[in-house]
Image (cartoon, rainbow, N blue to C red; front, side):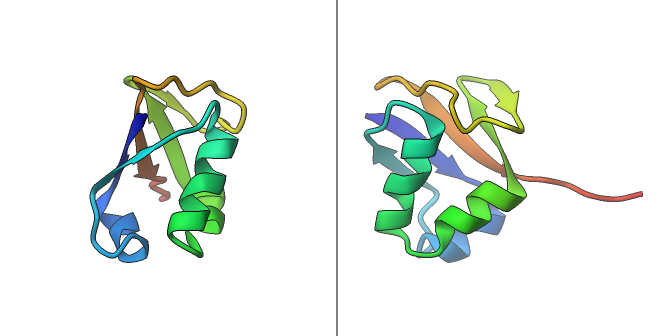
Amino acid sequence: MAQVHFSAGLRDLTGGLAQVEVEATNVRRLVAALEEKFPGIGERLSEASSVAINGEIFTDAEYEPVDSDSEVHFLDIFQGG
């Protein structure tokens, strides 16, 4: 299963968990599985975060593949001027 890591800004939605294991074939399915575990997290992940899969950062990652040995990090998007 993929190792999923959450930034500190997302842990309020995971009950404080920094990492979980999830079975999914792409980021869209991964987010759906996370939504089942942590209701409300799906919308936040879809709107306000980037995804790093095995060290490569994606901002539009919905259909990026996730392998069983992938390491996935959800990162807060920084905004500013």
